[in-house]
Image (cartoon, rainbow, N blue to C red):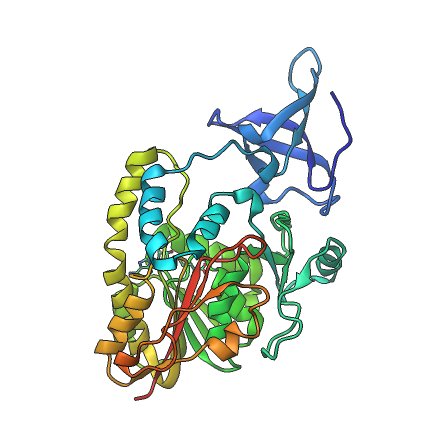
Length: 411
Ligand SMILES: C[S@@+](CC[C@H](N)C(=O)[O-])C[C@H]1O[C@@H](n2cnc3c(N)ncnc32)[C@H](O)[C@@H]1O
């Protein structure tokens, strides 16, 4: 029944059934084998869905039954998750839409999106925590820096990626210590790089939860202010927890959390920010959750409302920018109506703004890591730059989907 443990597996001792019979509440852990040898279980790992837990050995404790010890082997998520079911109604819609919009790139992007086993993960190091050990471990496992040879004004240790779908474990929670790294889709760094925050900037992250890009902004520069806004109260709490886990207390007056409707935020703080980031695209999950196909149909109806919301949010973001400042609009969707068409609508109706080119600044230096799709130019609008960059996931470069566009306020 026993076998040799491999890197990434955990040995867990002692457990008790929690309220929900679907979960096992882990009480203690005697050791962790693999990259995080000897560390406590992170908070996220303490409640483990039963399908991830396999009994290897049972030891019945003393006769009074006050203690029952079990030895479990918990396999890493990718190895032991149930087969996911694809939501057919969403997949059919994607086939129809993206077959047209992306042409020959769609079948290969589709294959990646449908196969979580091939997804790559980025590891962003936290400059506010001690990271030298993690960095060494990453390099030892074949992770490489995403930005070693570019002219981008950033430290080269910001984010590590692996050419294969190696999933680094979630960062451990240690009482009183900041988390050393954040797991992310490496394409999420692109809007942050496009924003180009500089020391002393006043920055607004208009739709900020769960906070990955706000953290990334703080890894790249020391702004005078980073206001992280999130309208949904639960997600706002999640955002606050993320910031608390990664950012030192000493930054609490620099990094603030607010809870306004992003559609009116810009007008209420007009011209107050140097850099504003707006992101509201939703990844339309191809896999069925509870509710299956029916839920998929509801999501598709909600999706139809997104371009209007996104246009309102982008206008608001631009209102918050001072003359000379920039807004970066990003989404994690491939959909033209939520990407190029939103940018086009805003450029057509907002006076005093100008689209900026990201091709030379980002697409060229990073093309070895990301598959950027040409989006074409819009001479009818008099814009020579393309409306933005679109990162399409491909085998071996599974980053994305991610769209980004940068607009400068002239007056
Ligand atoms: C795609 S997520 C943002 C991800 C985030 N930027 C990150 O990198 O972690 C979009 C967020 O926008 C929020 N949102 C939706 N409508 C909003 C609005 N009107 N005002 C502010 N936030 C809004 C959603 O609740 C959601 O948390």
